[in-house]
Length: 410
Ligand code: SF4
Image 1: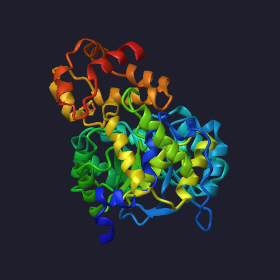
Image 2: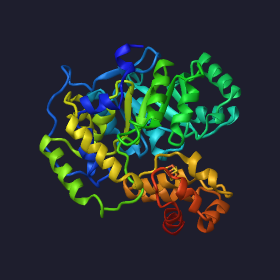
Image 3: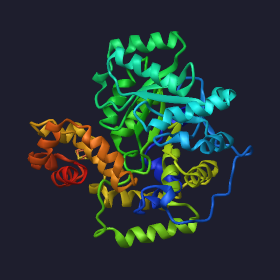
């Protein structure tokens, strides 16, 4: 590995960080919902989004990936524009909106030559080889393709969800040319999953929750370094780090001041948060759900722009993350969930709140919540979360938010 890449650290972030921070201060969850600001003008010579190597795969991927958790079948023009701007890493999943995989498949059916330009990723929620096999077959059919470039086991919480049977399945699927690379996505206990994966030579790629809030913890830095040294390609998701609940009482003045400073620089809050992540050269790409042309344009502009966060902005962003830490769940479910006798997926429910509160997706949150077993939802309503709250490193009001989920989503 390039030695220059090994030493990305908190100090490095603060010295060289570009715009990351201020945007985080804004309450709005997604770039598309931020106020209009001057566009970012600087572009690469060919006007395309820059690329980075994806681990040791030998593939180059654009630093911005189109997250497809929406009805792409009804948004074909988005795909066409994404290709023109060089956003040729597309991410979908068998469990996403019914029009996601089929929408990409529709695009390939109309423009078969486009398939070879795309680094195509889809995912399976299954854990057993038979289930994974079935889901891959269905995905290939919907995507109208013979292969995917990278296949993820979706949303693991523990590396034990992958085993030797998984490895054998992945090797067979690669040999058959149906997948080119294999890995997993994770938004729970990411650091421990990544550390374990770094010792598994059959993991090619990981998509993990990674943002201005968690990217500077020693555990995440160690995990990223381990994966980079192992040649695993990394894709960051949840880079906007939206809170699960909002409390303005302690941060309004500072938030507004920082937001104003960011606007003066010409960045939206979402663009600044993307830049924070891109500052780490170990991250190959950011997966962003871009379901409007405006959001696609803003993110592409940010990717083309070479300006970075100033150290002052990086400090401000860190301060904001600190002030609002009790509003954002970092996905360390192994800490709080271990205190319960009932099996309540606290970190997942926190993520449902985040989608509802910060990403404007209450229907998705409700759907996910109601997919939990009835018994789990009942236990959530009556469990004592006192011990979980005492152990939570960020002091989230777990009990209140679990009961609020039952009331709001149930
Ligand atoms: S509620 Fe707290 S301990 Fe539990 S996963 Fe979230 S941040 Fe971690």
